Image (tube, rainbow, N blue to C red; front, side):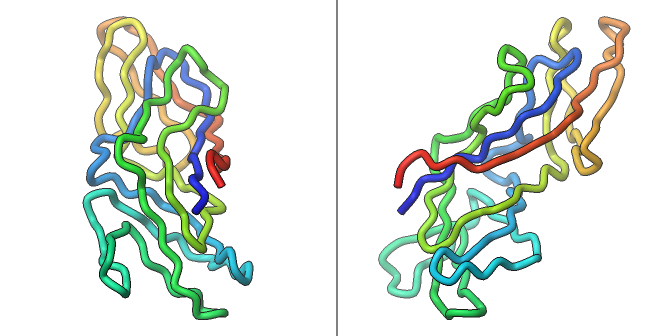
Length: 163
């Protein structure tokens, strides 16, 4: 049961921190690959912390149950509670872990940022709700500091924390 960390990297200009608007209801859009046979679907799937499903034997819950279309294996993915973190400007343009997944038989291969992010301006503390990162770039204007704020150069990767 590997624990995988989703790490993101971006360029924050005039932004102190970036995080999902609500950890409980945020949709994490992922592309997934079966660890058994290597089959990778080309469709985006999403997982939400507050939405759980019972496993087939009913012994536990997880956030995603996915049956591999090629080998038929049932795979699960769980968002780890208390693993949510903010992307902070102190480590700007470095990969930082923002959430962790407990993966059984499945592994995420790609992450799509999409929307429903929050950005906090560096100097004024102004909060920008519903930041949309779909295009890979977000800009706005901090009226308190009279300057442009920007998030650009978005990247993501998954790293193994525990095998």
